[in-house]
Amino acid sequence: MTTRIRIGRAGRLLTIAAMVASLLTLASTAGASNATLRTSVNSWSRTVGIDAHSVALAAHNRHPRRMTSSAVRFRTDALRARAAVAHQRPSTTGGMRARKFALAAFADYATAAQGWAAAGRARLQGHRAVAGRSARNAAISARAGNKLLVAAGKILR
Amino acid sequence: MLKRSFAITMAVGALAVGGGAASALADSGAPGGTTTGTTTQVDAPTTTGTTTQVDTPTTPVGTTVPAPVTVTTGAQGDDVADEQGAANDVAAAANGVQDEAIAETADDDSGDQQGANDDSEESGDHGHHDGQGGNSHSGSGHDDNSQSGGDDDNGQSGSVQANSGSSAQSGDE
View 1 (cartoon, chains in turn orange, green):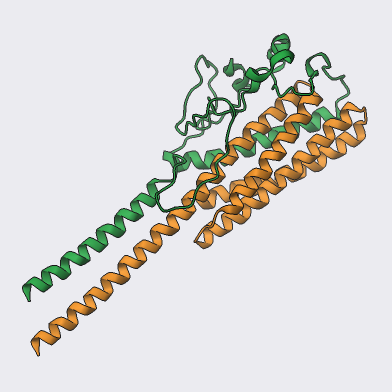
View 2 (cartoon, chains in turn purple, green; view 1 turned 90 degrees about the horizontal axis):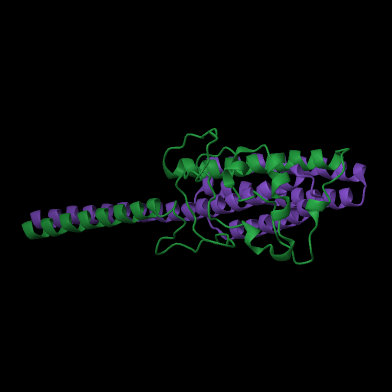
């Protein structure tokens, strides 16, 4: 009888241990998924930051052609970033929210870049009003993208 | 019976240690851009030129301008700075393009000539973030000056330097 009781206790203990181990495994997997998302968002943030720096420098130096080509590259990288983040599969609610924000941010950046390229082309053709309008619209998209990207980063911290 | 209890205790201990190790691995595998053994691949951006990615804050050689340094603690602080740095650069670009679009002054046509295959960048554009302490992009691509070939920017570097007021640009040289 005593032996049965002991065996029962041991069984319960084993069950609890298995549950704890499962929880730990789940937590580690979730951490890994969010970590890869964080790595992806960070890497691509750096890349689009560099591209944006090129755009800013070209604009500052009044080089609309270079500004346009930099904007096109910025757009390409923003779209690639979006695709890369879309591949990630975060397993926590926070991770999913961060992913959603990052996707929207990079989409906004792509839109902004399109506007910058349009502004550069219009500037080259001497259409200052059109260029100004495109640049203004692009700035709105860029601001929206900035907020979303920073929010995504904070969630993934 | 004692043996059984001992075996059970050992099993529980092993499970706990295994779970803890897995958790630790998952947490530590993030910042360097590496993946843990079982996780999905990270589609990190490829960069032209040297591909060394430096996550730790580095100071560009020869920089004398004290840049406003974002105080970061550890790798996760750097991560946040990456997004904030990108946001700053994008905001700067948006302002720059707006100014350029409506500027009354004529464009710098001589410095803006590009051939069909010219992917060269502005002189001084080495991809550094302005004022981002943890965001030095030294050696992380997009420094296309080496590709510029016939339409090299060397001829305009003086004027660009004169125009650029950014500390990062001057520190890049």
